[in-house]
Length: 232
Image 1 (cartoon, one colour):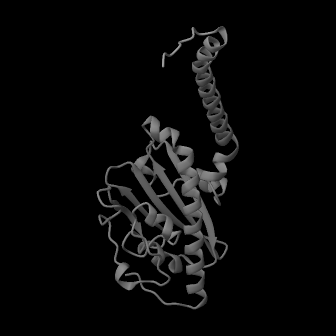
Image 2 (spheres, rainbow, N blue to C red):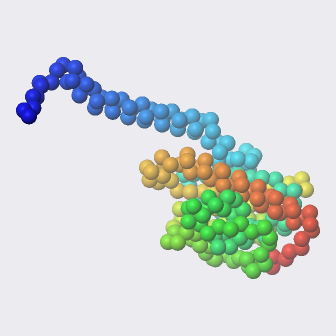
C-alpha cells in the first residue's frame, strides 16, 4: 500500500518546537524549587537539625577533637542530659563500633549501608580497653576511625584514616547529671557532597538522636541498678 506523507502543518510545527521549550521550562522550575528549598532549609531548619539538644553555649564551645579538623565545612553538635554520672556513661562510649557494641541506634538501617551493627544492652568488659591509636573498622574498604583523644570520663575523639571526618564526645557534669555532647566535623568539598549535605544532615539527626537516647537509657538504667565498673 502506498503511504502518503503529509507536509507538516502549522500546528504540528508549533508542537514540535514547544517540546524542547517545555523541557527547559520544567528544568528551570525544578532548579528554582530546589534553590528555594535549600534556602528555606538553611535559614529555618538547619540550625535545629545540626544542633539538636545542644545549648548555644555548647554549640559555641570548643571540645577536644575540634583541632583534628579545624577547617571542617560541616559541623554538627548534638547533646542530651543523662541522669547519671560520667562514670556510668563512659563504658557505653568506649565499646561502640562496627563489630563491637554497635551504636545504640537503628541497627537495621546501619546494616542497609553495610555496617555490621548489633547494639549491645550490656557493658562488655573485653571491649573496655580502648587505646589512643586504635583503629575501629567501618565498612569493608572504607577508612577506619582512629582513636585520637581518650580522656576517661571526659572526652573521646576519633578521626577517619583519610582525615575527612572527626567524631567527638564530651561529658560535662551539670547539676547532678551529665551533659553528653556529640560533635561531628566533616569535609564537604565536591559539588555532589554539597548537594547532598542537607540529606546527610537530616539522616544523621535521625540516627544520632536515637543513639544519644540509647546511651541515656542504658546509662541511667545502670546507675539505678548501681552497676559497678572499673575502666582501668
